[in-house]
Amino acid sequence: MKALTLFEKKVYTVVKSIPMGETRSYAWVAARAGRPRAVRAVGTALRKNPFVLIVPCHRVVRSDGGIGRYALGADLKKKLLRIEAQTLLKK
DNA sequence: AAGTAAGAAATTT
DNA sequence: AAATTTCTTACTT
Picture 1 (cartoon, helix red, strand yellow):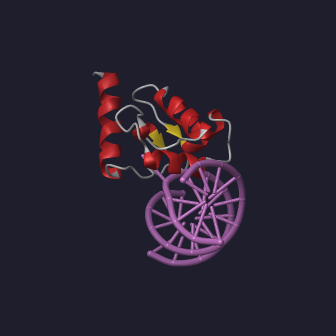
Picture 2: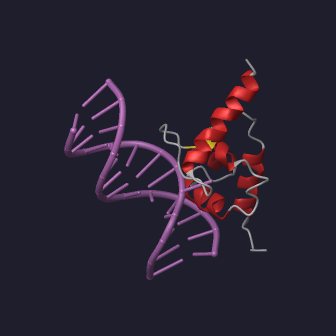
Picture 3: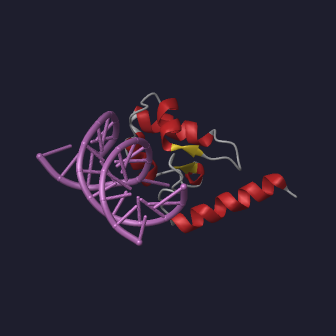
């Protein structure tokens, strides 16, 4: 297990708290993690993502409308968000 | 000292 | 006006 910094831990906790079907920006997570300017560090932390099955990092998107990147593919990330949104709407 | 899953601004189409 | 590209900023390793 790699040594995670406090900041990373906080980031994972925050991202885990994001409700299903919703998205948050990296800036939002960074602010909640105690370092509002560390948006890039958030990405770097999620990129390692030791909890890829625990932390819903696919719910974290860019604030300017971009989808950002995803360890399993940005394409999959978009799909997941689409599926989650529909699951919540449930028609 | 180097790299990065972002952000904003500038430029192009 | 919208999309894409480029440079900068702050944080971890």
